[in-house]
Image 1 (cartoon, one colour):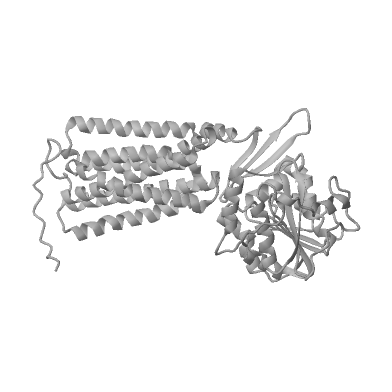
Image 2: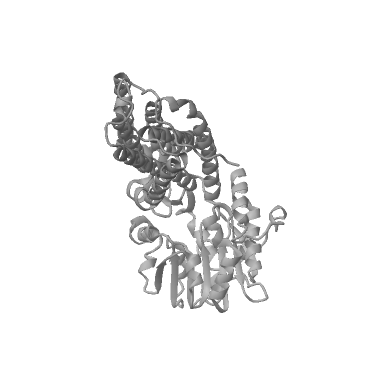
Length: 535
């Protein structure tokens, strides 16, 4: 049987310095201040964790993998940090101040360091593991030291002390978790948000404890710790002032051409580069680092995406994705199109397509056409509540290298598109590269077929992308005819001969034995990560 817990004996441990052993404020107020520090430090710790996950998702993609690396490494490191803190409990005030100073500095500059590792050193994952371990170990060292400080203020049984400590810790984590996506990220961005949190961490962790337990620390140690806190704040403040210049330099290192525009939205990072040379100006759009089009050859991609579909019924057209307006431009070239509805998640992308001069010129003011209608929504959720049908559906989504985009290539998604098709309607899906990512391409084709479509895969050469593929699909029993409409407008790239040849795949790039992509089993994330990494 468990023995009853006996009341703890009064604290007789010697003070750390030459002052009295207890704080000079009432015990109740002292405990409240320590728990407030716990609250603030927990909020800061969770922000560091979320910032590392979000940065990896932006730079590398595959948010599940990034979250798994960060969470597993940090939780493991927290256990190590707790063990390493055991010998420090004899001098908890000094130890806690040093731990918080180190955590504020490392956590504050973590995003900047990882961005630099990605942009210039190509060492992102090793750097992520090191940073996550360091931050996790320092967070893990906090709890034993804080427990010791609480017991120095007023002895209480272990269960009550743990309850108070973890209540403040968990509530702080809640506030930090909500503040990151809704306040810090949109208002300050990744780099400056982390630096600001580091400053809060330094003040909450060092200043409060050093003031509250000033009598337990010798004069020399107090001065040294105070100077250390000032140095940490100076480094964080100086880095904050230089953050914009650093971010511009690091971002430019990732792109071959000069950056003309860069925006970090709630959903993605939008970068537009523009190269002016002896040849035609090359405007390029990147979303989270992935090329979406080059103005030099985008007509090849969009003509191949849109016009084979338009050989069928196309009075009412639905475009899912394609916020740049280039697919919409091609659709509206048909005079007998009655309406064209475009569904785009990011309102900022629509704003740029309507107002950014070079992009507006490229899409030929497509959004000003009275037949065009824009819906700002998640296509998956929007389709679930749809109560109308369309003659033609264009699925022009980013490549499925993440769970959030892989759902837009799932059997379930195509099933909802099928429900949205009017009798005789057809769908086309941009499906990636059958050369660089054959497993992904044929998995998309197989997933469309699994949703009850008859399919015709085809591919063309787009120099900026390489060999690029599409799937034309119809709910009818027979595969749809691959051709051009009798009244097709003048095209720069596509004609009947090119389209006929596009349905032929070389022997080494024909159908593969791959699985379908579903919500429960997003195989495309695995295929995309494997194939594009090897390419």
